[in-house]
Length: 132
Length: 248
Image (cartoon, rainbow over all chains, first blue to last red; front, top):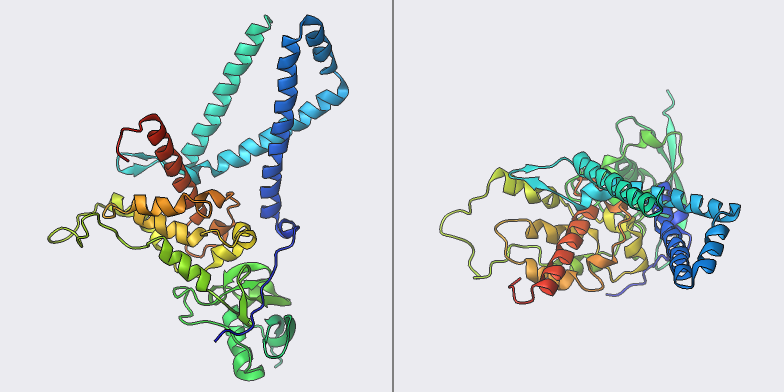
């Protein structure tokens, strides 16, 4: 017997009902910030290929308040993305040492440590390349 | 002595009577020891015998009484009325499923998906096992025990926006149960399950919202199971890409 059924539909703003969903959507939206940064970075690299003058002009424009504000916003987005992501890492990475499972907090801390040291390495590379 | 009361706004859908659901309010005694399921039973016994809903064990084991209470999927046998005082409490059928009647949902889709992931021990030699028992250490048992606690209550499907938007998605509980068998050292069916779960409707549909794990009454952590599956799937792919000669 096939009786009539009610089929609920999800609205486009389904994610506004719960804070956890809002947080998820915000985390996903931070990818847009990453994309924007990547585009700016590609333009920066391309300006090097176009010669010293273009590179210097582009570097100068990056010092404008609008670009600085944009970069600060992108940094905030990335920090939010990284923290929420690293906090989820123990769910995806279950590490065993012999018979014992490594506690989730240790897995998360390993990710944070990796983040810190890689950032430090990049900072060292950039400052050394720029000769400061 | 007057008994304190609380209002339940209950989702009603009677296909022979209405095209769209309506909410009906009932006043029930607000007793400290009553759960939402007790209130529904009170309505059924004393106020309105036409109300339909599923329940069975009343002790958080059978997984039948899952419903949305104030927008959150819960087992109504484990959710106290007192928590929502002074009310009202809105009771609806589990989200993301077609509704057959009132609080009763259609679960065929879940049952079919569950069967597809082959949630049983698969042996390559088709043998039940060795003569005598399989030896399994406490650590090997601990690897999958968490995932074996699933009671198929479907709260995770109800909490999962991906399942709501993409009904083809295999879904949290079915993937967690597939993982339960993958992690079992007696099982040899990982490849068969991976074949199914690495398709478009499998693990890669999951965007790690994480709500499935939040609402799970048995702490199964289906979101974690899916992410671990993704890691295993990606590792397999890289292995086959870098070492195509090696057997999986």
